[in-house]
Length: 423
Image (cartoon, rainbow, N blue to C red):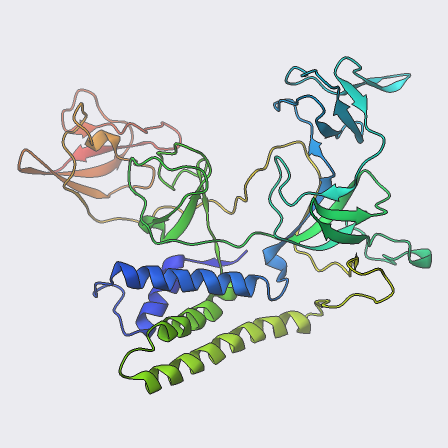
Protein backbone atom coordinates (compact mmCIF):
# COMPACT_ATOMS: atom_id res chain seq x y z
CA UNK A 1 0.00 0.00 0.00
CA UNK A 2 1.36 3.40 -0.97
CA UNK A 3 0.90 5.79 1.93
CA UNK A 4 1.26 9.43 2.93
CA UNK A 5 1.62 10.78 6.45
CA UNK A 6 -1.38 11.87 8.48
CA UNK A 7 0.43 15.13 9.22
CA UNK A 8 0.75 15.98 5.51
CA UNK A 9 -3.02 15.59 5.04
CA UNK A 10 -3.82 17.57 8.21
CA UNK A 11 -1.44 20.40 7.25
CA UNK A 12 -2.94 20.59 3.74
CA UNK A 13 -6.42 21.08 5.22
CA UNK A 14 -5.13 23.74 7.62
CA UNK A 15 -3.56 25.66 4.74
CA UNK A 16 -6.85 25.63 2.84
CA UNK A 17 -8.44 27.23 5.89
CA UNK A 18 -5.77 29.97 5.89
CA UNK A 19 -3.63 28.63 8.74
CA UNK A 20 0.15 28.38 8.75
CA UNK A 21 0.59 24.77 10.01
CA UNK A 22 3.99 25.62 11.49
CA UNK A 23 3.59 29.17 12.75
CA UNK A 24 -0.08 29.51 13.75
CA UNK A 25 -1.54 28.12 16.93
CA UNK A 26 -4.46 25.82 16.14
CA UNK A 27 -7.04 25.23 18.84
CA UNK A 28 -7.79 21.72 20.05
CA UNK A 29 -11.43 22.00 19.01
CA UNK A 30 -10.39 22.87 15.45
CA UNK A 31 -7.87 20.02 15.33
CA UNK A 32 -10.42 17.48 16.65
CA UNK A 33 -13.02 18.64 14.11
CA UNK A 34 -10.59 18.26 11.22
CA UNK A 35 -9.53 14.76 12.29
CA UNK A 36 -13.17 13.75 12.75
CA UNK A 37 -13.93 14.80 9.17
CA UNK A 38 -10.76 13.07 7.93
CA UNK A 39 -11.98 9.82 9.49
CA UNK A 40 -15.47 10.23 8.04
CA UNK A 41 -14.12 10.81 4.55
CA UNK A 42 -11.70 7.89 4.73
CA UNK A 43 -14.44 5.52 5.86
CA UNK A 44 -16.80 6.76 3.14
CA UNK A 45 -14.26 6.36 0.33
CA UNK A 46 -13.15 2.97 1.71
CA UNK A 47 -16.54 1.45 0.91
CA UNK A 48 -17.10 3.19 -2.41
CA UNK A 49 -14.98 0.89 -4.56
CA UNK A 50 -12.87 -2.24 -3.89
CA UNK A 51 -9.50 -0.61 -4.55
CA UNK A 52 -7.13 -3.60 -4.82
CA UNK A 53 -4.52 -2.36 -2.35
CA UNK A 54 -7.26 -1.94 0.28
CA UNK A 55 -8.28 -5.59 -0.04
CA UNK A 56 -6.85 -8.93 0.95
CA UNK A 57 -7.38 -12.51 -0.19
CA UNK A 58 -6.49 -15.35 2.12
CA UNK A 59 -7.32 -18.96 2.81
CA UNK A 60 -9.65 -19.50 5.75
CA UNK A 61 -10.95 -22.50 7.65
CA UNK A 62 -14.47 -22.57 9.09
CA UNK A 63 -13.18 -22.88 12.64
CA UNK A 64 -10.22 -21.80 14.73
CA UNK A 65 -6.96 -23.29 13.50
CA UNK A 66 -5.14 -25.50 16.00
CA UNK A 67 -1.65 -24.48 17.07
CA UNK A 68 0.63 -25.69 19.83
CA UNK A 69 0.30 -22.55 21.97
CA UNK A 70 -3.49 -22.19 22.27
CA UNK A 71 -5.62 -23.61 25.03
CA UNK A 72 -8.75 -25.38 23.80
CA UNK A 73 -11.69 -26.24 26.05
CA UNK A 74 -14.67 -28.55 26.27
CA UNK A 75 -16.71 -28.73 23.01
CA UNK A 76 -14.43 -26.32 21.13
CA UNK A 77 -14.39 -26.94 17.38
CA UNK A 78 -11.12 -26.58 15.49
CA UNK A 79 -9.31 -27.22 12.21
CA UNK A 80 -6.04 -29.19 12.11
CA UNK A 81 -3.90 -28.18 9.11
CA UNK A 82 -1.70 -31.34 8.89
CA UNK A 83 -4.69 -33.65 8.46
CA UNK A 84 -6.90 -31.02 6.73
CA UNK A 85 -9.73 -32.14 9.04
CA UNK A 86 -12.04 -30.73 11.69
CA UNK A 87 -12.26 -31.94 15.30
CA UNK A 88 -14.26 -31.25 18.44
CA UNK A 89 -13.00 -31.33 22.01
CA UNK A 90 -14.90 -33.94 24.02
CA UNK A 91 -17.45 -32.70 26.52
CA UNK A 92 -16.04 -32.13 29.99
CA UNK A 93 -12.35 -32.38 29.10
CA UNK A 94 -9.59 -29.84 28.56
CA UNK A 95 -6.68 -31.05 26.43
CA UNK A 96 -3.23 -29.89 27.58
CA UNK A 97 -1.80 -27.03 25.54
CA UNK A 98 0.05 -28.41 22.52
CA UNK A 99 -1.87 -31.69 22.34
CA UNK A 100 -2.68 -32.29 18.66
CA UNK A 101 -6.09 -33.75 17.79
CA UNK A 102 -4.56 -36.47 15.61
CA UNK A 103 -1.27 -38.17 14.83
CA UNK A 104 -0.06 -39.70 11.58
CA UNK A 105 0.48 -43.45 11.48
CA UNK A 106 2.57 -44.63 8.49
CA UNK A 107 0.10 -47.43 7.80
CA UNK A 108 -3.27 -46.42 9.23
CA UNK A 109 -3.03 -42.72 8.39
CA UNK A 110 -4.35 -40.03 10.73
CA UNK A 111 -5.52 -41.38 14.09
CA UNK A 112 -7.65 -39.17 16.33
CA UNK A 113 -6.56 -38.68 19.96
CA UNK A 114 -9.74 -40.15 21.47
CA UNK A 115 -8.78 -39.02 24.97
CA UNK A 116 -9.57 -35.42 24.16
CA UNK A 117 -11.04 -35.15 20.65
CA UNK A 118 -13.55 -36.59 18.22
CA UNK A 119 -13.77 -36.04 14.45
CA UNK A 120 -16.20 -33.33 13.37
CA UNK A 121 -17.89 -34.73 10.29
CA UNK A 122 -20.77 -32.26 9.86
CA UNK A 123 -19.57 -28.65 9.49
CA UNK A 124 -21.66 -25.52 9.47
CA UNK A 125 -19.75 -23.81 6.65
CA UNK A 126 -19.48 -20.19 7.69
CA UNK A 127 -16.58 -17.75 8.15
CA UNK A 128 -16.88 -15.40 11.12
CA UNK A 129 -15.95 -11.77 10.52
CA UNK A 130 -13.79 -11.92 13.64
CA UNK A 131 -12.16 -15.33 13.80
CA UNK A 132 -9.90 -16.14 16.73
CA UNK A 133 -6.26 -15.56 15.81
CA UNK A 134 -7.18 -14.21 12.35
CA UNK A 135 -7.36 -10.71 10.94
CA UNK A 136 -10.81 -9.07 11.06
CA UNK A 137 -12.88 -8.90 7.87
CA UNK A 138 -14.52 -5.61 6.89
CA UNK A 139 -16.60 -6.62 3.84
CA UNK A 140 -16.56 -9.84 1.83
CA UNK A 141 -16.13 -9.34 -1.93
CA UNK A 142 -15.90 -12.96 -3.06
CA UNK A 143 -15.35 -16.57 -1.99
CA UNK A 144 -13.30 -19.11 -3.97
CA UNK A 145 -12.73 -22.83 -3.62
CA UNK A 146 -9.09 -22.48 -4.70
CA UNK A 147 -6.41 -19.81 -4.89
CA UNK A 148 -7.89 -17.40 -7.47
CA UNK A 149 -4.48 -16.08 -8.46
CA UNK A 150 -3.47 -19.53 -9.73
CA UNK A 151 -6.68 -20.24 -11.65
CA UNK A 152 -6.85 -17.87 -14.60
CA UNK A 153 -8.06 -20.29 -17.32
CA UNK A 154 -11.73 -21.32 -17.47
CA UNK A 155 -12.41 -20.47 -13.79
CA UNK A 156 -16.05 -21.49 -14.01
CA UNK A 157 -15.23 -24.93 -15.37
CA UNK A 158 -17.68 -27.18 -17.23
CA UNK A 159 -21.35 -26.48 -16.58
CA UNK A 160 -20.43 -23.56 -14.36
CA UNK A 161 -18.80 -25.77 -11.71
CA UNK A 162 -15.61 -23.82 -10.99
CA UNK A 163 -13.84 -21.97 -8.22
CA UNK A 164 -16.44 -19.19 -7.78
CA UNK A 165 -18.68 -20.00 -4.81
CA UNK A 166 -22.06 -18.76 -3.62
CA UNK A 167 -22.27 -16.98 -0.26
CA UNK A 168 -24.56 -14.86 1.87
CA UNK A 169 -24.27 -12.90 5.13
CA UNK A 170 -25.79 -14.36 8.28
CA UNK A 171 -25.77 -13.73 12.01
CA UNK A 172 -22.64 -15.91 12.22
CA UNK A 173 -20.67 -14.16 9.49
CA UNK A 174 -20.53 -15.33 5.86
CA UNK A 175 -22.32 -18.59 5.00
CA UNK A 176 -20.58 -20.51 2.21
CA UNK A 177 -22.91 -22.52 -0.03
CA UNK A 178 -21.61 -25.85 -1.42
CA UNK A 179 -17.92 -25.15 -0.72
CA UNK A 180 -16.62 -28.57 -1.77
CA UNK A 181 -13.41 -28.46 0.32
CA UNK A 182 -12.22 -28.06 3.93
CA UNK A 183 -11.12 -24.44 3.36
CA UNK A 184 -11.96 -21.53 1.09
CA UNK A 185 -10.26 -18.35 -0.09
CA UNK A 186 -11.96 -15.14 1.04
CA UNK A 187 -11.51 -11.87 -0.88
CA UNK A 188 -12.40 -9.00 1.45
CA UNK A 189 -11.89 -5.35 2.28
CA UNK A 190 -9.43 -4.76 5.11
CA UNK A 191 -10.67 -2.61 8.02
CA UNK A 192 -10.29 1.14 7.40
CA UNK A 193 -7.86 3.06 9.64
CA UNK A 194 -9.01 5.53 12.27
CA UNK A 195 -6.83 8.52 13.11
CA UNK A 196 -6.19 10.79 16.09
CA UNK A 197 -3.99 13.77 16.86
CA UNK A 198 -3.67 12.96 20.55
CA UNK A 199 0.11 12.91 20.99
CA UNK A 200 1.98 9.96 22.43
CA UNK A 201 3.09 10.63 26.02
CA UNK A 202 6.37 9.06 27.12
CA UNK A 203 5.88 6.60 29.97
CA UNK A 204 2.09 6.53 29.76
CA UNK A 205 0.46 3.09 29.71
CA UNK A 206 -1.71 2.40 26.66
CA UNK A 207 -4.16 -0.44 26.18
CA UNK A 208 -4.62 -2.54 23.09
CA UNK A 209 -6.19 -0.66 20.14
CA UNK A 210 -5.56 2.79 21.63
CA UNK A 211 -4.30 5.23 19.03
CA UNK A 212 -1.77 8.04 19.36
CA UNK A 213 -0.09 10.56 17.08
CA UNK A 214 3.71 10.25 17.09
CA UNK A 215 5.29 13.56 15.94
CA UNK A 216 8.76 12.14 15.09
CA UNK A 217 7.18 9.97 12.38
CA UNK A 218 4.27 12.35 11.56
CA UNK A 219 1.82 9.45 11.73
CA UNK A 220 -0.81 7.78 13.86
CA UNK A 221 -0.09 4.42 15.53
CA UNK A 222 -2.24 1.77 17.24
CA UNK A 223 -1.19 -0.14 20.34
CA UNK A 224 -0.93 -3.91 19.92
CA UNK A 225 -0.87 -4.78 23.63
CA UNK A 226 -2.32 -3.79 26.98
CA UNK A 227 -0.17 -1.90 29.51
CA UNK A 228 2.01 -0.69 26.65
CA UNK A 229 4.59 1.86 27.85
CA UNK A 230 6.91 1.80 24.83
CA UNK A 231 6.93 4.44 22.10
CA UNK A 232 5.66 3.83 18.52
CA UNK A 233 9.19 3.34 17.22
CA UNK A 234 8.88 -0.24 18.55
CA UNK A 235 6.98 -2.27 15.89
CA UNK A 236 6.51 -5.13 18.37
CA UNK A 237 3.99 -3.10 20.36
CA UNK A 238 2.71 -0.55 17.83
CA UNK A 239 1.41 -0.71 14.28
CA UNK A 240 0.99 2.10 11.80
CA UNK A 241 -2.48 3.41 10.99
CA UNK A 242 -1.71 3.89 7.29
CA UNK A 243 -3.11 6.73 5.24
CA UNK A 244 -3.60 5.39 1.68
CA UNK A 245 -2.08 7.76 -0.86
CA UNK A 246 -4.88 6.88 -3.28
CA UNK A 247 -7.41 8.62 -0.99
CA UNK A 248 -5.31 11.62 0.10
CA UNK A 249 -6.55 14.21 -2.43
CA UNK A 250 -10.18 13.19 -1.92
CA UNK A 251 -9.89 13.47 1.87
CA UNK A 252 -8.12 16.84 1.79
CA UNK A 253 -10.86 18.47 -0.30
CA UNK A 254 -13.72 16.58 1.36
CA UNK A 255 -12.68 17.29 4.96
CA UNK A 256 -12.13 20.97 4.08
CA UNK A 257 -15.67 21.13 2.68
CA UNK A 258 -17.11 19.41 5.76
CA UNK A 259 -15.34 21.84 8.10
CA UNK A 260 -16.77 24.81 6.20
CA UNK A 261 -20.27 23.38 6.57
CA UNK A 262 -19.79 23.18 10.34
CA UNK A 263 -19.53 26.96 10.58
CA UNK A 264 -22.47 28.17 8.50
CA UNK A 265 -23.39 30.58 11.31
CA UNK A 266 -20.52 32.87 10.31
CA UNK A 267 -21.28 36.24 8.66
CA UNK A 268 -19.81 35.20 5.30
CA UNK A 269 -22.41 32.46 4.82
CA UNK A 270 -22.72 32.87 1.06
CA UNK A 271 -18.98 32.67 0.47
CA UNK A 272 -18.55 29.67 2.77
CA UNK A 273 -21.45 27.88 1.11
CA UNK A 274 -19.90 28.39 -2.32
CA UNK A 275 -16.46 27.24 -1.11
CA UNK A 276 -17.92 24.16 0.60
CA UNK A 277 -19.91 23.19 -2.50
CA UNK A 278 -16.89 23.61 -4.77
CA UNK A 279 -14.63 21.62 -2.43
CA UNK A 280 -17.18 18.79 -2.18
CA UNK A 281 -17.37 18.59 -5.98
CA UNK A 282 -13.56 18.64 -6.12
CA UNK A 283 -13.40 15.72 -3.68
CA UNK A 284 -15.85 13.64 -5.70
CA UNK A 285 -13.87 14.38 -8.85
CA UNK A 286 -10.66 13.11 -7.22
CA UNK A 287 -12.38 9.88 -6.17
CA UNK A 288 -13.98 9.43 -9.59
CA UNK A 289 -10.58 9.80 -11.25
CA UNK A 290 -9.11 7.02 -9.13
CA UNK A 291 -12.04 4.75 -9.97
CA UNK A 292 -11.69 5.60 -13.66
CA UNK A 293 -8.05 4.50 -13.52
CA UNK A 294 -9.12 1.11 -12.19
CA UNK A 295 -11.90 0.65 -14.74
CA UNK A 296 -9.44 1.62 -17.49
CA UNK A 297 -7.26 -1.24 -16.24
CA UNK A 298 -10.30 -3.54 -16.63
CA UNK A 299 -11.25 -3.81 -12.97
CA UNK A 300 -15.01 -4.27 -12.55
CA UNK A 301 -17.24 -3.75 -9.53
CA UNK A 302 -20.40 -5.84 -9.54
CA UNK A 303 -23.20 -4.04 -7.74
CA UNK A 304 -25.96 -6.44 -8.83
CA UNK A 305 -26.19 -10.21 -8.79
CA UNK A 306 -27.87 -12.67 -11.20
CA UNK A 307 -31.61 -12.80 -10.58
CA UNK A 308 -31.98 -16.56 -10.80
CA UNK A 309 -30.48 -17.25 -7.37
CA UNK A 310 -32.62 -17.01 -4.21
CA UNK A 311 -32.80 -13.62 -2.55
CA UNK A 312 -29.81 -12.86 -0.36
CA UNK A 313 -27.40 -15.24 -2.11
CA UNK A 314 -24.42 -13.63 -3.83
CA UNK A 315 -22.47 -14.96 -6.77
CA UNK A 316 -18.70 -14.54 -6.52
CA UNK A 317 -17.42 -12.53 -9.47
CA UNK A 318 -14.03 -12.58 -11.25
CA UNK A 319 -11.21 -11.96 -8.78
CA UNK A 320 -9.70 -8.44 -8.71
CA UNK A 321 -7.52 -8.89 -5.65
CA UNK A 322 -4.13 -7.62 -4.60
CA UNK A 323 -2.35 -10.38 -2.64
CA UNK A 324 -3.16 -13.97 -1.68
CA UNK A 325 -1.95 -15.87 1.38
CA UNK A 326 -2.48 -19.50 2.31
CA UNK A 327 -3.60 -20.87 5.66
CA UNK A 328 -1.11 -21.17 8.53
CA UNK A 329 -1.43 -21.87 12.25
CA UNK A 330 0.22 -18.58 13.21
CA UNK A 331 -1.89 -16.32 15.40
CA UNK A 332 -2.78 -13.04 13.65
CA UNK A 333 -5.19 -10.98 15.71
CA UNK A 334 -4.48 -7.55 14.27
CA UNK A 335 -3.67 -5.83 11.02
CA UNK A 336 0.04 -5.07 10.84
CA UNK A 337 1.20 -2.70 8.16
CA UNK A 338 4.79 -1.86 7.15
CA UNK A 339 6.96 -0.94 10.16
CA UNK A 340 7.47 2.75 10.95
CA UNK A 341 10.09 4.58 8.88
CA UNK A 342 13.50 5.35 10.36
CA UNK A 343 13.52 8.25 12.78
CA UNK A 344 14.29 11.63 11.27
CA UNK A 345 17.33 13.58 12.38
CA UNK A 346 16.60 15.88 15.30
CA UNK A 347 18.87 18.85 15.92
CA UNK A 348 17.58 19.66 19.40
CA UNK A 349 15.22 18.28 22.06
CA UNK A 350 14.33 20.27 25.19
CA UNK A 351 13.20 18.23 28.21
CA UNK A 352 12.47 20.54 31.12
CA UNK A 353 10.81 17.68 33.01
CA UNK A 354 14.00 15.59 33.47
CA UNK A 355 14.86 15.41 37.20
CA UNK A 356 18.06 13.32 37.19
CA UNK A 357 20.58 11.71 34.87
CA UNK A 358 20.26 8.08 35.94
CA UNK A 359 17.66 8.08 38.74
CA UNK A 360 16.28 7.35 41.23
CA UNK A 361 14.30 10.56 40.62
CA UNK A 362 12.11 10.12 37.56
CA UNK A 363 11.90 10.89 34.76
CA UNK A 364 15.63 10.54 34.24
CA UNK A 365 17.72 11.11 31.14
CA UNK A 366 18.52 7.41 31.03
CA UNK A 367 14.80 6.49 31.03
CA UNK A 368 14.04 8.33 27.77
CA UNK A 369 12.95 5.97 24.96
CA UNK A 370 15.96 6.33 22.67
CA UNK A 371 15.20 4.02 19.76
CA UNK A 372 13.86 6.97 17.77
CA UNK A 373 16.84 9.25 18.46
CA UNK A 374 19.12 9.77 15.47
CA UNK A 375 22.87 9.86 16.09
CA UNK A 376 23.82 13.50 16.68
CA UNK A 377 20.55 14.48 18.35
CA UNK A 378 21.08 17.10 21.07
CA UNK A 379 19.09 16.84 24.29
CA UNK A 380 18.94 19.86 26.60
CA UNK A 381 17.82 19.37 30.21
CA UNK A 382 17.65 21.47 33.38
CA UNK A 383 18.50 19.89 36.75
CA UNK A 384 18.56 22.00 39.92
CA UNK A 385 18.20 25.12 37.78
CA UNK A 386 21.39 24.23 35.90
CA UNK A 387 21.20 23.69 32.16
CA UNK A 388 23.02 20.73 30.66
CA UNK A 389 23.32 19.61 27.06
CA UNK A 390 23.89 16.04 25.87
CA UNK A 391 24.39 14.60 22.41
CA UNK A 392 23.39 11.13 21.23
CA UNK A 393 26.51 9.25 20.18
CA UNK A 394 27.02 5.80 18.69
CA UNK A 395 28.31 2.97 20.86
CA UNK A 396 28.01 1.96 24.49
CA UNK A 397 28.44 4.44 27.33
CA UNK A 398 31.75 4.41 29.20
CA UNK A 399 30.88 3.62 32.84
CA UNK A 400 34.07 5.36 33.99
CA UNK A 401 33.11 8.64 32.29
CA UNK A 402 30.61 10.65 34.39
CA UNK A 403 29.61 12.56 31.25
CA UNK A 404 28.29 9.38 29.60
CA UNK A 405 24.70 8.27 30.27
CA UNK A 406 23.52 4.82 29.18
CA UNK A 407 19.92 4.64 28.03
CA UNK A 408 17.78 2.04 29.79
CA UNK A 409 16.67 0.64 26.42
CA UNK A 410 20.25 0.26 25.15
CA UNK A 411 20.84 -2.79 22.96
CA UNK A 412 24.25 -3.58 21.44
CA UNK A 413 22.61 -4.71 18.18
CA UNK A 414 19.40 -2.75 17.64
CA UNK A 415 19.96 0.40 19.73
CA UNK A 416 23.71 0.90 20.12
CA UNK A 417 23.86 4.51 21.33
CA UNK A 418 24.34 6.60 24.47
CA UNK A 419 24.07 10.23 25.64
CA UNK A 420 27.28 12.21 26.08
CA UNK A 421 27.53 15.56 27.88
CA UNK A 422 28.74 18.37 25.61
CA UNK A 423 27.86 21.49 27.65
